[in-house]
Length: 433
Image (cartoon, rainbow, N blue to C red):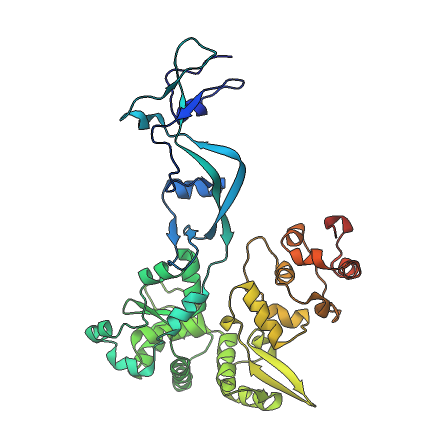
């Protein structure tokens, strides 16, 4: 066995070790617990972001910290180890004190040794998670933009004094545990708009007034809902008293851009579903309605050029039979928590049993990396026997779903046979004890 090189006394000596060779170790002069040093185990795809400092740690004092790249969010998990993990600093750390040496009995002279600074009891690892965007909705709901603020739009000094419940981008990235890309997507999903540097959601009554005014002007000016000139629409809404920023936001909230003008104005078309859902929400804001009365009023409010379908209200309403009548009420998926456990708790309080076609619109947006929608349902500790009584579910579970669903192991043999039939699972994929 060859002795270690005398040129390497730090981490380099270990990194350069050849097979079947060894190196003596000794305590570093600064050996200790060093609780400020934590070992982090990384997937290779994350290494460039860490090395180039493209990550941030986000979270409030009362929250578990997360690490965010530009596009994803990761939970920080502690992983214990049964083996001793030695932390050996690089050789440059020995400049200010005597080089560590030890007397190896295999050699007649003192050998330079790798110096252990700390013995780590475990490591930290990063696990991709869904962004925690519920807090974003709560923050922006504190102070929605309302009609009375129109007169203050030009008064920046007054705006600065009335900033309670208002948040800039920097405030949001400090308070919300989500990557920058996920935060932008969350703002878009909430139809938020930046006004005087603050991100705001706009009061629904205000949006309704703007939309009705757009319809009114479309009739007066013979506009096609499928081809709206942005400059023309915005200028007319501004002349009607709406701020320029909000006039543009009306097109973004209820339409989509179909043509980007080169040197001219962009062209937009109204999104039929967004418009129809808006009027359905307005009707049901007052409480549940008989289905026939709701449909009659809904069709009356929607412009003649648009064709509404009840399928557009998936994830927006719930229906129930009371006697011989069907009633409808608002139940919007966007108002439900993003945590799967909390989401399913609310859903099964609303209904003890669901058909999959009715349930799917309310869980389609749930995002847990590595888990399908079916796996999420199993993992929610829901009353599965009640679900299967419906005889409506037809799923295919992946092995990952089985691993993530401890509730499966709690089911008795009879229930498992039913699951095999419904899921098409092979018995070898899971062992019941």
